[in-house]
Length: 95
Image 1 (tube, helix red, strand yellow):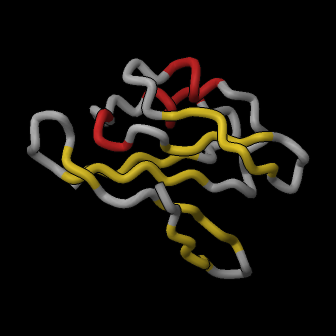
Image 2 (cartoon, one colour):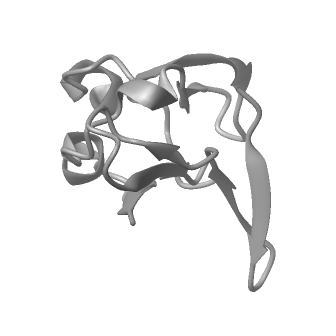
């Protein structure tokens, strides 16, 4: 899946997945990963109960592989990735 790049003030970039509907088809869900904040620890990948996140093939400015949205349709917006991210690099938007 391709990521969309949004530039947010002072050159900060946020990479946003395409919106999708959760498995119940109720609300659109977007998983936003700020690669500039991510250190590639993989905590979000391990805590995702639906295996939505996985390791990307690209390297960020820290020299680490960062997470990417692999199975966007499976996201249930539990926000465990957002809650456990020590760098506040993930935001899950519902609706």
